[in-house]
Image (cartoon, rainbow, N blue to C red; front, side, top):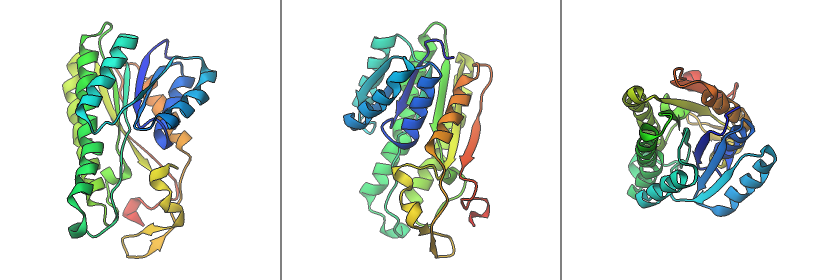
Length: 251
C-alpha cells in the first residue's frame, strides 16, 4: 500500500492515463487527475471512489506553461508534497509524408509530448527536492516509437526519442536528491490514440493492416509495479506491448 503518498497523472481522463490513475488509487495513492477536459476526469474520479483515497481533479492544458505552474501549485497547496509524477499526456500528428507535415502539427506534438513533460519534471523536481521526506519518482510515457518509427510519424517519433533523453537526464540529475526517474514504453494499448489500429495502419512495406492491441489496464499494472518500488530501486526502462503487434523488425 502507498500509505498516503501523492501521485499526479497527466492525461488522466482516458486510455493509459485512466488505467494508471485507477491502478494507483487501488494501491492506496491519493491521486491528482489532470487533463484538458473536466468531464472525463470526473468519470475517472467516480470510478475511483471505491478505493477510498483522496482524488483531486485539476483541468489543465499542459501546453500552457502557466497552467502547469498552477497545477503543481494546487498539488502542493492541497497535499503539501508530491511522491509520483506520471508524465502521460500526449498527442499524435497526421500520417502524411514528412515534407507535407504542417508546422502547427509538428509544434503541437513537440509542445505536448516533449515540452510539457520537461516543464512538469521541473516543477516536480522543485517540490521533491524541498519536501520532507525528500525525493519522489517520475515516470515518463515513452512509446515503442521511442525505439522504432512507423511510416509517416516524424513528429511523434522525434518527440518520443527525445523523451528517452529526458528520462536519462532526469534520472541522472535526480539521483543526488532521491528522485528516481524511469520510462514505460507502451505498444498498442487500447486508447483513443490507437483506435485506428483496429481498422489498419500503414506498415513499412506500404501495406495497411490491422494490429493487435492490449488492454490499457495491463499498462496500469506495470505503472503500479514501478511506483511500488522504494526510491533506492528504479525501473529505468520498461516495454509493455501487445504480444502480437509488429515491433521486433517492425513486421
